[in-house]
Image 1: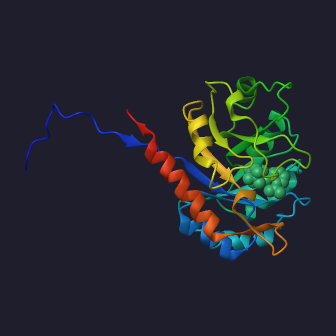
Image 2: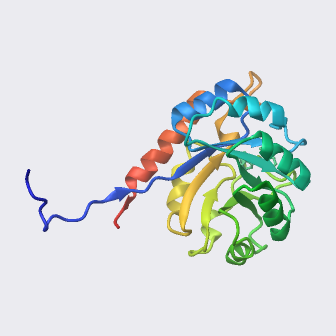
Image 3: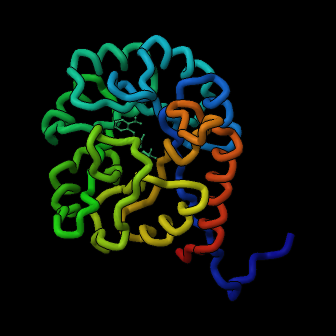
Amino acid sequence: MTAPDPHRSPPTFAHRTRIKICGLTREADVDAAVAAGADAVGFVRYPHSPRHVSAARAAQLLARVPPFVTPVLLYVNADTTEIIADCAMLPGATIQFHGDESAIQCADAARAAQRPWMRAARIPVDSERDFDLVKFAHDHAGAQGILLDTLVEGYGGSGKCFDWSRLPPNVPAHLVLSGGLTPANVSDGIAALRGRGRSLAVDVSSGVEAHGPDGKPLKGIKDADKIHRFVAAVRAADAAIEFHP
Ligand SMILES: O=C(O)c1ccccc1N[C@@H]1O[C@H](COP(=O)(O)O)[C@@H](O)[C@H]1O
């Protein structure tokens, strides 16, 4: 066997941006997300969302998910008792708090449900309004990650972007970029956010949904081709930015 050359330059690694596909309501869409290589699949447990699924339906969908793909349950101002009951039915799920919950409410509910949790930071689009993401990350230090979404009426899933360039350069948290991502813009989002947090993941819902014959989005119905193109765009962005340890 040849001895390794000590003068060879160290290997370079392409960073792997993790991917969550959210708002799944159908078996075919869960299968498409998994087949495309998604790391996480999201189920909306907010009754006012057009993508809402019951806990029983989430359990049916989750039953198809293979090992090493993380289910995520999205809540908006839900009761802790509901979250605990869901988590008892839905093994291995991470909790995503996407409403007006305080940091203490998030931490207490997640502790009671014995699950890791993410907190959505809802960033204003209005450039006059500041959002202190570093303070937000400190306030939610118990969160596994901070998910960045656009501040909209109706809490989320709007398909709208915020201005990525206004985020601070160093955020003491694992970041998940969401809000209006699509196969066309996700590589720009990754380039804008890479290196600003401890790690970077992306999350998409509207941007991989199907449209009806009238051109209107079919909320909760995904398009398998868009999911594949979204994942391919993320992988291409990763390959374009090499990471030197
Ligand atoms: O999907 C919803 O209907 C929803 C409702 C309430 C809060 C959050 C919601 N979705 C999440 O919002 C972000 C961004 O979504 P999009 O890609 O802009 O549509 C994402 O985490 C969704 O899961």
